[in-house]
Length: 94
Image 1 (cartoon, rainbow, N blue to C red):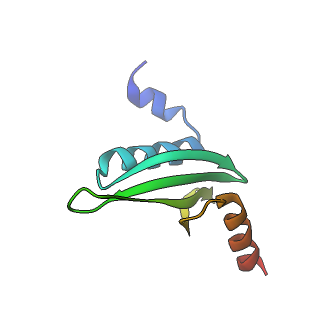
Image 2 (cartoon, rainbow, N blue to C red):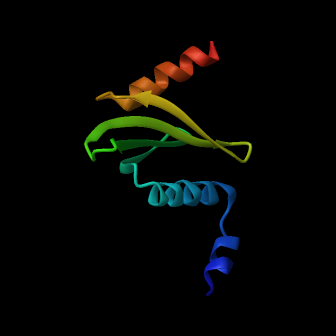
């Protein structure tokens, strides 16, 4: 099966995940260390690299798709990203 045919078979969420994966591969200034499915999206830890090549991080993000659009919520450096996401989302809801 041709690559384009395989991509055409993906749903919106899969396409969004593929887009983020490709962006990560094309952007050498950062690297994804870990992805964890959580709530209606996933938690992602990333490392950033300075111009001199020094590795910084991890920085946590909560990534999700809402109404067909990709969203990324910066969590920051934390040892408990799930709790941090819950607190941020609760503060936005109320």
